[in-house]
Image (cartoon, rainbow, N blue to C red):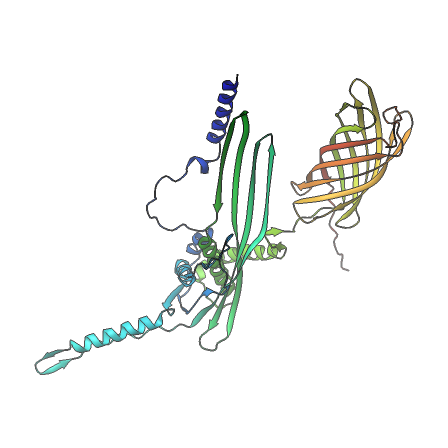
Length: 462
């Protein structure tokens, strides 16, 4: 019997491992060959930008890490920097991909000047004499000068902007997941080399996500035998790709905004295409006004009134044992007098039962004051408190409190996960008076909250 149980458990673990995600099934067993670098979503957008009237000669002396941030270390010190130190190369690649610029070498201008001096010296040593005359070798062409310079850098790397996770364990079987968000921020500005005027400044940021998923199994098979298994994986978004994406976004934004204010010029045949790109850019700017840290947006709108319907599981907490959960429900109306606070008037039915002892059906009404914590977000916790009545053969007064989560699935419809606790003023809900504690009930439910769309106000001008 024990051998059979062990076999079943091993098969269950094997099945769980085989059905796990592709990351677990594709663990690297040998080294990969070198490949071309990955592309970010903005690499393609840069390459597809409309052509300029004339390419712009541009210089970048130094686009560097200005954060001074070192990698986090759990134990001891880590002197490796959190940000790649070759960000000038990333910026120059983005400028080249855009087809808008003629980047010139300025970061290592000393190397360039030294090499040109070597070329001059070598040519002078090998001047050719012919018919008594000296043939002077061709002179080197002059260096290009940049009409504008790009300045700026990576100004911040924020670690652990947001962390979290979830997990559970029961009878030796458990699992969980954790995540962490870091954030890198880039500033980029255009400077006129003639006047020193700063012509445009843009600012972009990129979140860097790290996640880990794990599962474990621990069980005593016998007094001297233990079965234990673990599996898991961790995935970290490469910092270099995040930095690249933030820089490419900055270059893309810089081109559009400079075209809009006339700093850069576009070919006339592409004016319609640029207008479409600018319209998308303006829409992003408007949306960005409501952006919060963590790439979250408080841009959801909930109307002032809504109707509510919830299906509950009802469980009595009375004087008898063996309480049985039954299905009930309620419908109600909500009115928001602020974005956060609303009043709810509802009515419903419930069945409170102790198995093979007592079963009572009640109709009830409730008046609640509710607080919605994040009214401008898709997911918001909420909590409420109120008073109510229950009716069977007579009225029973009660007070209740509860809370849960609301998920705004569309413009008007939201889903609610709700838990509520009822406290009675008497001890006769189960037809039996015993002890000092009054009868109580617990409800857990799932429902919908439909926000009634309100007509927009229009200003009438005479």
